[in-house]
Image (cartoon, rainbow, N blue to C red):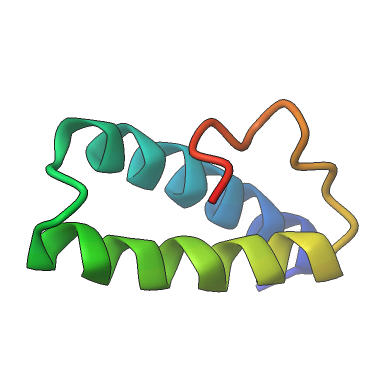
Length: 60
């Protein structure tokens, strides 16, 4: 997988995950699990040089 493909997939997953997080209760176990993946994706995208200013709707 090329770096561009990896970034594209990560951006799509990051956006999708945030939509699910907005629909979940913040005090639920499901939200806690999604938040872990959210942080992982945020790190991956930051290291890849993606500007998250517009993409990050959760901002946690």
